Length: 149
Image (cartoon, one colour):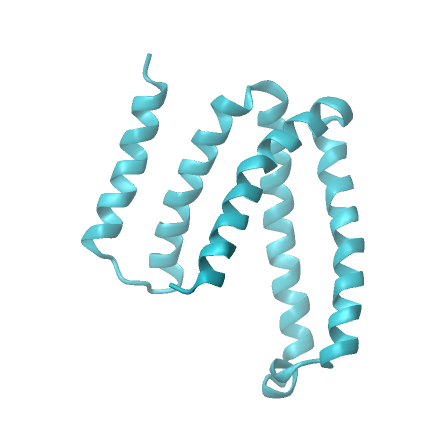
């Protein structure tokens, strides 16, 4: 693994680790439904700025020229992923409005890891390995141990 990959893992881990804490603070101050929408509006504004900069510097990109259905695919998959993300985030913020971060985040994150692995196997035809099965099992057992009191 390259140094840049390790740095990306560290930044990703710290970012996703602090995110539920920041979300809990925000949900408490603004409300879980309103914050869900406000977050995506602000994300959209930031994304439009970054997309504009990228298009200015790099043009539309190779994928546009390689895929004759580029715009259709961008709208279709952008819509599907956005709806799934919005439903998921509203559910997450609802849970954060009711429970402590230290309680809900490990359950949600553990379930997320299991779902990622299962959906990768089902939809992307990724290999089912002994390591993957052991990892999924460990996450499930670990979550039950964490919350069985």
